[in-house]
Length: 104
Image 1 (tube, rainbow, N blue to C red):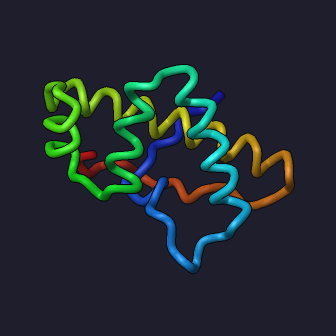
Image 2 (image 1 turned 180 degrees about the vertical axis):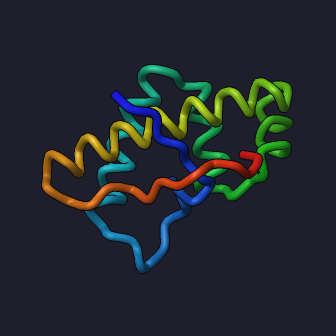
Image 3 (image 1 turned 180 degrees about the horizontal axis):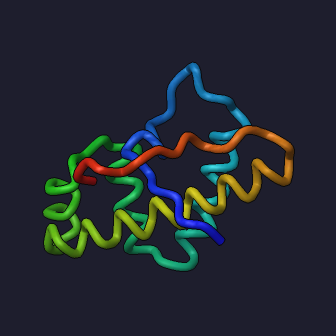
């Protein structure tokens, strides 16, 4: 195991340029995550698909910004691990990871 820092682009909104297999892997991982932790999965959906800033997603969910930040960090790393685990098994490139020095 090694630490991997993620930037905000590590899990970006869908675009025409993204690999369809990677989008399917993300969808599958998000479905698994929703079974494990529905609250954090809801936060991911609000940020990823609705495009809400963290502060607005927290307000919509009725949680504090600090809690939303913790949930967001956990959710991103969980999903990153699942998506990359699947892509490594298929022999594909992994999701981009870089230094996460910016605020989530």
